[in-house]
Image 1 (cartoon, rainbow, N blue to C red):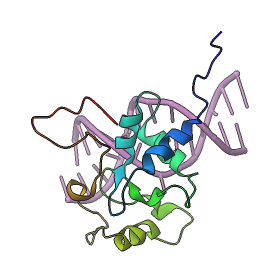
Image 2: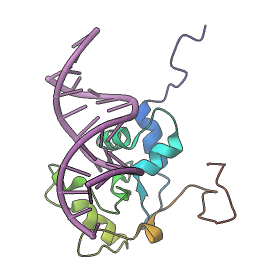
Image 3: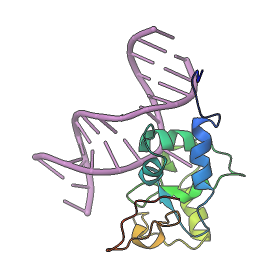
Image 4: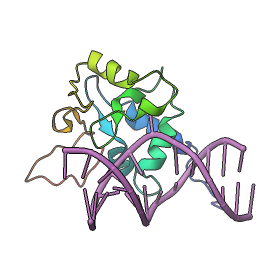
Amino acid sequence: MEDKQVNDKKYRERVYEVVRQIPVGRVMTYGQIAAILGAGYTPRTVGFVMHGADTKETPWQRVINSQGACSTGRMTVPVNLQQQILEAEGVVFDAKGRCDLMIYQWSPEGFEEKDDEQPSLFW
DNA sequence: AACTTGACGAGGG
DNA sequence: CCCCTCGCCAAGT
């Protein structure tokens, strides 16, 4: 009997796994991660899951929204602490607190932004 | 068990 | 370019 839950890994664990792949000085968006994980994952839930991430194990700071800005301003944290950390990693933000995703957004292996290539295969 | 909230995203005005 | 609305799904109360 298959019972249920084929995945022992928690729903959250999968998100963290992807986030840990992000190199220093690079970022990913909530929506991008949700898309990679597939059905059952949405930008909303990814963000919710990231909320409980371990700062020691998971570079939560490298996950930002599609606007290229940090959404942590409303959290309990002082201010754009996330932005400050990313800047320390080499990411440049403009006066509006947004960085250029065209430059800093990172994708797993085989997900280059080629015009001729179609990223059917994910990592 | 049901309702509400939340570190989002795309579309429309 | 900025603001508002709807959709989305897990977790907390």
